[in-house]
Length: 456
Length: 167
Image (tube, rainbow over all chains, first blue to last red; front, side):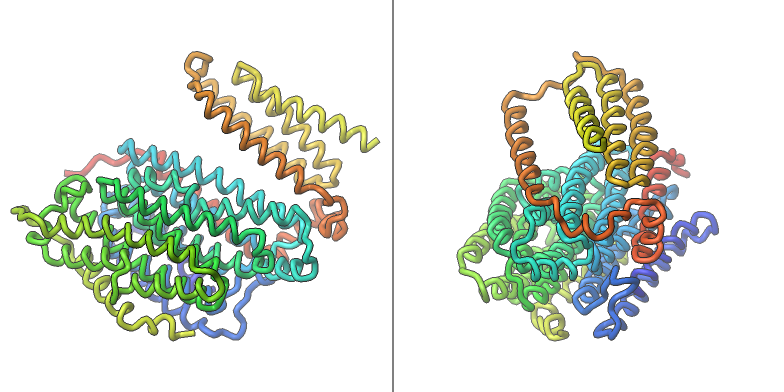
């Protein structure tokens, strides 16, 4: 709750910056505020009274852990994206929108009532629609905003219809009441099952799981690259956390009806994401498809439906977000220097700039799941959680997907070390801090997974 | 009496909804859509949901439809400019739409005696809605202000002219 309030206030403060003329200090102020929010949210760990205002939101350890992941990612994102706030006209607006998006994300991980889930998703989505189109003179950015808006509104329709159906069947929005309803009425009304499927579709769209992933590559490609990295990390983390919470709490007892569908979705997502990523020639699109495939691995944790599933989800999203932000920071630096994010632009990067090469190598290896980096243990724990009560077929598919993914992640690494190039790439101070921090965090989380998994 | 009113409104809304899809002129489509919305608002009244009925008329039939009309007249659509979808796409759309319809209709089976209907038949009255909104649902109500604010900031940001770059 504290993090929610602090970040909301920070958003309002950002809007005031335009009037009160402290735009120059806004960036520092935001970083400071996010750090305070991070600290404040951890004081709520193991809190005795986690629910607020008629159980609208619940700040149990699961929510607090995800809020931690979201705020850490947001701090890293701000370190990556100072250039996004450079233009004079919209500094305050953009900061406010990003912070409000974060508020939406926090609502999505801490909700205990489906109205809060819906409002959280809407706050996050509306901010992202606008930010995706924030590069107003660029046609691709406009197209991406429009596409994201139309597809997002369509998916929200499904989600809302699902919520309405479930409310119709259970007479409650409270996720715990819905669970009780299912326990008392094992043969729930058909309305309830239709509602589950509709919500499944809506949420699968938000995490860009196949076959609802068609928007992702175009939107990721067209949006300003900083916004793309925000979508690939924070939006995905919040959506998967909401997905997990809903299905592991409310719909767990009805898992016979949805687990088969979700298994098919997972298998298709992993295969489609990885196989399509192989054929991409642009890093942004490659990362978009890799994000699709990671949504598949994350869905394995939902299917696992156990304690370890929840814990591994936190670990996985943190590892994935750190690696992805670092990868996008490298892409941003390359775009600034060479004008595009084609695979060929990375030729000879290792000779130009050691830090960029090391950071992108570590993040690519982590995304591919090479031990001893964080990405490996993320996958390891998710697979372990899934195998505790399921047969290994889906894990075999996931492993073959990872094997395919090694090809396109290594293609980038090989490109960087292949040729020599004369151009020097200058990095800003905050980018250097981010890259060093992400390398250290990725290795540290990999060597000591208990840092995250041992806190429970 | 209520039953006759229901059948009449249901007939009007389905007929108008079909006319929205089938009429050639986009302006006619929009006008039929207004009629559809009015008949659905009538259904809400029959369900004792007065607030919803009024909001539905004000927001949908009023604001959104006027917006639609403006956009259509500004765009000056005519049949030649309309993009033609391929037959396969139409075929697939009909099949999937039909499947969705079957699912929806089937899911209404046995919904006559649902928990919700018996809970409180007066729930749709404005006074009751207000009480719930400011007691039980106070937090979502307040958080919606952030949603509206971010939409407003976004609208201003997208429509504002860029300042010329300072040299």
